Length: 394
Image (cartoon, rainbow, N blue to C red; front, side, top):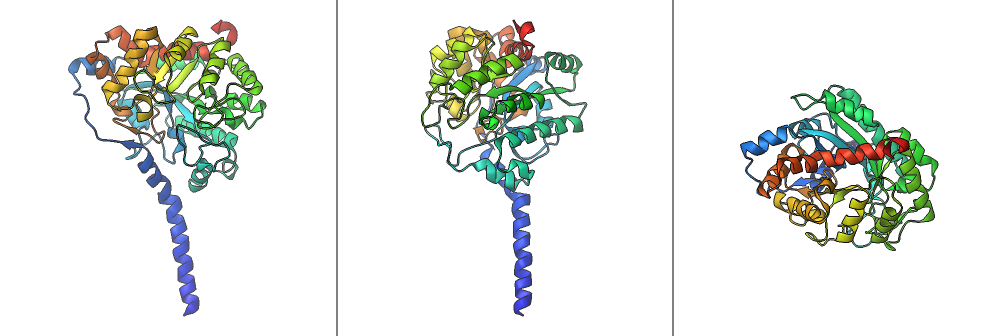
């Protein structure tokens, strides 16, 4: 009898372990990527017609972090290929999140804190090489994006050059296909201190990179780190190399000193891919007016997020309020979209409903040309300038 009990306990343990790997990642995502169900704008015929004619670019999504097939519609998260098509998105930047300190917060995180992505990598049964290496995680994310594009060749194209972007935009039709997918990373801690990994990530498709994420790293201080310092010597070297290769420099999550250092040395347009502005939401990650002017001086853009940390109140009106402040301060040509979808955030609407932003812009008095610029043309201009060969960009 004892042997039979032990046998069945073993079976139950195996089933529990299997259940964890099957169900836990999806349960975690449902809890972390939320649509709050709050009030939405009533969409006018004018907004629907205009939205259908826009070239829409979103500068930041963390969808690659989660264990699901992005080519299929899912009942969780904020973004997948069917919803991108419904939202009429033309180019989506997909970011790799490779390290997150447990208990992350906006005020101060240790680079040595327990890493939440380690558990996620193991729980999702990713390749063993990704379990303890931020570089390998980003490489894995790049391969996931390429596999998704290969699985849906009529609908999703991974793009690495201006020519590939233009080819996708030229091929887009009334069905909202194909969509251009560009790979970025959130924090260059994934270089693991090795400059040669920048070239390796470039070769895998990376065309945009945030300097820091939620902690200080070998390149610079984070707004959410302990020291919050500026660029290190290694960081300055990597910024120069990024510009030379054609990798857009993203200052989202950078400390104020890091932002100042990047802006002072930039030779190409700089992006803040997802965030907000202090004037409308006084969160530490958001840009001051002087920083907004600095980004504008490089010819860059600020991608306004849809989440509480970026705009405080996640209504469409609050998103547009941040866009209005940037427009009034430095001009409409420096405003873009940076949703942060699937980035463990709560939002009001998913990517299939991004017409909410179009309606909000109309309600705020933006004209058609300004809306076209904000919804995508500004971001396209900066992406083209940032990934072109250095001599062409000059």
